[in-house]
Amino acid sequence: MNKHFTIAIDGPAGAGKSTVAKAVAKTLGAIYLDTGAMYRAVGLYMVRNGVDPKDSETVAARAHEPKVDIRYVDGTQHVYLCGEDVSQAIRENEVSAAASGVSAVPLVREILVARQQEIAREQPVVMDGRDIGTKVLPDATLKIFLTAAAEERARRRYDELTAKGQTVSFDQLLKEINQRDWDDSHRAASPLTQAEDAVLVDSSHMTIEEVTEYILSLARERMDNA
Image (cartoon, rainbow, N blue to C red; front, top):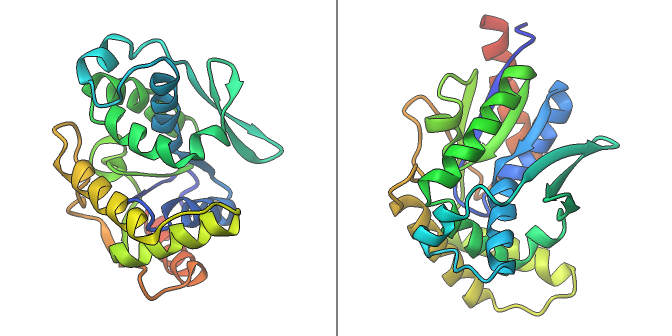
């Protein structure tokens, strides 16, 4: 089995990428790198500093200001922004839209992709995001494009937020997901798209466990043949 491997999991928001990627990484003994969290941190920085995340010129001018770092504490990934642990703050709903805005700025992507590739060279990794298989890890051992129907993704998000005691509108969440899909797939910089050699996995009618086991079987097959 190939000991150094990279697994890229791309797909739209709410498809379950992070949950699956974490499970796959843990089983294979790899580092899980949530690249979306890095963009969320940059988005949070811009919001906190009064910058409109969709104002590409201003975001680009300040792209080197947010210092984003990934650290593992007791085996759990923590995201730091200028030294502050923002692992929880970046999960706020408004930060999702901010992340989509800043991720469309080429310089922001250039800075973060360089860091992501550096990490991948150092150790086996499982990364999830929007352009991992197409831009970040074009030579990944295995590429997955994980998706699900927009309504199903909105339902999952609704259940997640209401379980935390938040009052949210399903229709509003669905609207936001559809808008995020459009923004991510139509941006000029590294739009969301399925890599030609990626395996398409539709999780609409699959459990997280089923998706995880399927991807693990593909990964083991690839590594055995590497």
